[in-house]
Image 1 (cartoon, rainbow, N blue to C red):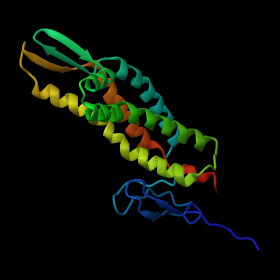
Image 2: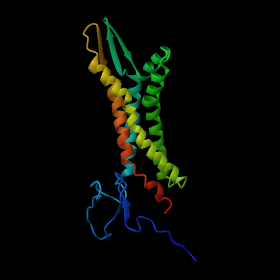
Image 3: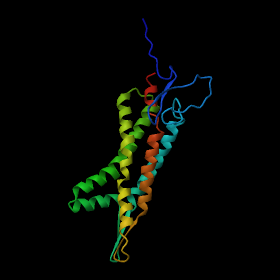
Length: 208
């Protein structure tokens, strides 16, 4: 006695990536563009060119990550003296000042999370391309966590923005955003788009 396991594709079902609503697709011969009845997002059985687009975004984020950490993210002018700080030098400054909680937050949000997110996306892309069957449920959960935590990398940008907006005291004190802030913002935005472009349903295709 043999048993067959029907998949969502075989039953012409797909889930909306935005709101996770389960929707029935039209028949194969019906070339109709359908939208999610809940959030109106366009539905596809699988995201088009998901792997190629995600790889392109991940590589771009890796390229921008280098100047984001090497160039100063903030320049402080105080009584004519200019001090430029990178992300890591800012973390070291807070550690030396005894402000461990602030140093931990900046290090986690601005250094640890972006690196972790890039590594996770590379792992997921490689496993999908190799048709890996290794723990698909855990890889899907890892993707969901990565997609959720990516936005917290903007903490450093928020701090720089607030400081630039508030500190304008002329020759006495002035704060300006450094070139590293632009590259770091690009890394955060690109990795967010990379997580959105990746289709986690590809993880399960190797099992079918």
